[in-house]
Each structure stands twice: as structure tokens, then as C-alpha cells.
Length: 370
Image 1 (spheres, helix red, strand yellow):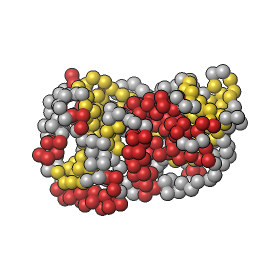
Image 2 (tube, rainbow, N blue to C red):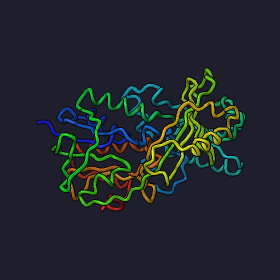
Image 3 (cartoon, one colour):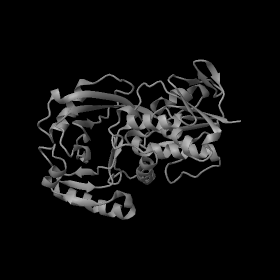
Image 4 (cartoon, rainbow, N blue to C red):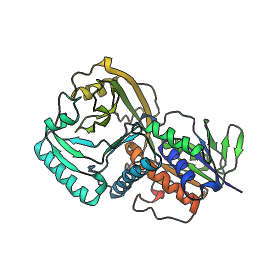
């Protein structure tokens, strides 16, 4: 008899978990159901940059999770046969205006490259060399080139992973679910029994677990980005991502599409309406590098809700108080980088059991869930 598994949340963690439950050995013995109401998902509004290596965050566990996540994505792109419209290793450029800061960043890149060969080539670029790689720019700045960096369309990735899993053992239901005080899943058709449940609901995790008396230290943050129409250069599909100092990220997607974002609005929380001031801020940031952009260039806006912890670190694992429940949240702005690896780890422990040691990636789960 097949084991029944539920996944709550169809974002990057939920979709990745579903994908690996369908591809890891033993997945043919599972019957998987994913629930998602499609509201507010951070993945659908993510800017889509995979380049963690030059981060100056001091959390070594997060850095290990992010760098291993970036490496996993390279493998996932091949195994899932992702198109370059979804995942494309275009490289990234991180800019600095101060010459001393620029050389310090380049030195850091060389040090990190020795530890992380997946970074690929690193190089110090002048403003003119940056513009040569990104002809969209009219006001280029010098920067550090990282060849292993990539851009990722979060929504397209989730759709592709779920589509592939549905061909094996996954059923997707677009509905909102809840738990009762005993931890039983309540769907639109009533109570449902599952052998294991992954709760990957991002900022909505506290609300879901509250009926069981479980507290989760997660806060919501609103994020907004804009999509602009720009000249379709012949090389645009292969243009690198620009990560400017103190400004919004600048992500060419090819075919005349440019994504700029995203904002970090702690006050907005679960508000999914477009904020005009945020739109103005995003456009102004983009104009620092391309003065040909205008409000008429904007062709779309995306809004989502991220989940953050107090120390900006993700968490994931099995709840000791409810052993059939596994949770994941707190990915913040690094969800597209860390989410697939978290999904793979959760899928593996559900199939193979045991008590894996994930301490190299995170602090104790009890720091966030009580």
C-alpha cells in the first residue's frame, strides 16, 4: 500500500519537495497531494538571482546552505531539462563605486572561488567592460564578474517542477487547508489522513500551526518588483544579472524583458496590492543605470509575501511534538537559492527515514518553533 504524503504550499520549497518525491528512488511507493490556494506566494514575485558567493552575511550555516543550493540548481537544471527561459547561467556582476571597496570585493571573490569552484571565473571589470556585457546600461559602474551566477524565473520553475511530478505521483489541489488541534489536515471535503505532511507555507506557517498550540517565530514582509519593456538586443538573452551597490537588482530576461527588484516592505506584510511609491522607487533605481527607462517602459508588477526570522535564517525539519509533520520557512530573499535544496532534504528524509543531521545548514529547529 502506498504511503500518503501531503504538501501544504506550492512555492519553491513545496514544489521542490514534490519534484524530489517523484524522482528519488522509492518515490513510486508514494501518493503525494499538494495544496496551495495561489495567494501571495513569494516565489511568483521573486527577482530570481542565484549568486550567493559574494554575500557578506556572517551566518556560516546560511552561506553553506546557499552555496550548496546554488550548486544543486546547476544539477537540477540538467536533470529536469530546464529551458534557459527558466534557468540560465548568464553570470552576475556585483558593482561598487568606491575603488577600495571594489578591490576588496574582488579579493573576497578570489578567496571564495578557491572554496567554491562552481563560482566559475571571477574577474574585475571596468565600467566600460560592464557596459560591453550589458549594453542596456547608459550609466555603468565597475564591478566583479562571477561566471557561475544565474537568473531564475521562480514562477516558471515551480510550474515545471510540479508538471513533471504530476506525471509520476503528484496531485495538485488549488485550495486552502487548515489543521485541527490534533494536527489532522482539514481540506474542503473534510478531514484527510496522511502518513506525513510537509508544511511549506512561508509566512502563513504560524497561522497553520496555531490550532495545535505551536508558535512559530516568523514575520511577513511584502516584496514588489517591476517588469519593463526594453530594446531587444541580440545578446540580451545571455546578458548577466546586475547586482548594484545600494540599488535594486537589474535582471535582463531576454526578448526585451527587464525585471527590477525587489523591495523589502516590513509594514506591508500580507498586503498584495501594488504600492505606487514602491513602483516609483524601483523605476528610479533602474534609471540610475539606464536613463532611457521611463514610466511607460513598465509593463507589469508582481507582489508577494516573504517569510523572515529574527536572524534572517531559514529553518526546516520534523516537529518532535508531531512527528508526521515537517516544516520549512524563513527563507526570506534567498528562497530561490535555498528552497530546492531544502525540498530535496525533506523529500529524502520522508522516503528513507532516520534523523539526518542538518546542523551545517541551520540552527536547532527549536530556535524558531516552540
